[in-house]
Image 1 (cartoon, rainbow, N blue to C red):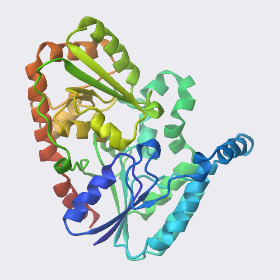
Image 2 (cartoon, helix red, strand yellow):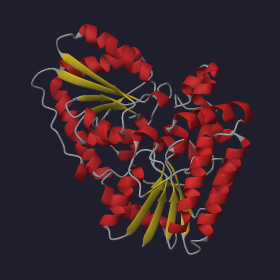
Image 3 (cartoon, rainbow, N blue to C red):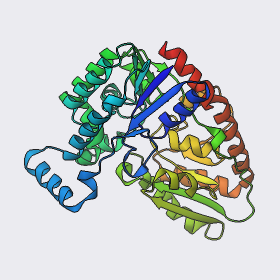
Image 4 (cartoon, rainbow, N blue to C red):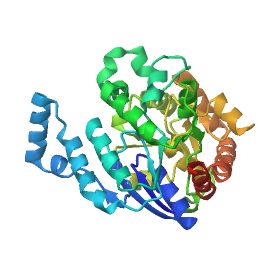
Length: 380
C-alpha cells in the first residue's frame, strides 16, 4: 500500500510511518517540520525566503501590517504546490489537521483539491491530535474541569496569545474544516483530550493511541544514587497554553525546600533532536498542565522510564483500566505540584517504580507496529 501523510507537529506521523514501513508499506511524509522543532519529512514545505533573510523578513512584516497578508503562509502554499507533481499514485492520504499545510484556508482547500484529484483512487482520513474546530468549539463552552483554553477563559485579555487556537473558530477555518470533513472517509483522534470533545460535539471518531517507536528509545532505570534531577522544557509559543508558569512556581519552592537533594535542568525552544536527549539524565520530567491524557513528548519521556508530570486524569486511568500510577497528573495548582514533587523526592523508590510502569505502559498500549496495524484496519 502506498500512503501519504500530510503534516507533522509532534513526531506522531514519523512514528506511524516507521510502523507502516515495518509492515511493508511505502510511506511518504510531507510537512514544514514545525518551525524550530525541525521534524524529519520527505518533502519539505518549510519556509525559507520569508524567514531566513533580513530584507524579506522586513518586507513580510510591512506587508502584513498594512494588508494583513501573511507571506510566510503564502510561501508554504507555493512550496506545497511545487511538490504536488511528486505526490501521485497513493492509496491513502492522511491529514494531521484540517490546516495541515499551515497556509491560507482558501489556498489549503485548493491545494487539497489538486492533491485529491491527482490521487483519484485514494481514501482520505483526518487525524485530530491538536487544535481543531469542533474541539475548540467544545472547549470554549468551559464544561470540563480544565483544558488548554482555560487560561484564556479566565482572562480574555490573553486573546492574542491564543490566536492560533481561536483561529479554528473563525469562519474561513470553520469552512475549511467542514470541507475537509466531507472529503474524509475516517476521522481519527490520538488521545482523550480530543476524543471527549469530538464525541460530545456529535462526531463519530476512531480513537487510536499515539504510536511510539520504543525500539528507538532506550529505557533507563530511574535508580537514584545522588541528586534527583528534574527537567522542564519550555516552548515559548505554548507557554501559557501548557501552564508552564505553574511548574516554574513549584520549582522555586522545591529548590528552596530541597536545596541539596535536587538538580533542575531547563531548556527553551530547542529542536526536537536536541530536546529528546536533553532530559536523559533527568528522573522527573515536567511536561504540561491542563491535559486529561498524555501528549507526544510525555509519552516519549515515559518510554525512557521517566516520571512525567502531565495529563493523567481519572478518565485516563479508567480508559486503560490502570490501578497504579504510570504518570503524575499535573493540575493547575502549585500546592498540589509541590506536594507531588515532595513525595517523590522523599520516596525515591517510587520514582524507580513509576518509571518502570511507565515504560511497560508504553510498550503495551502505544507500541508503534500494532498501532500502525490499527490505522490500516481503521482506514479500510
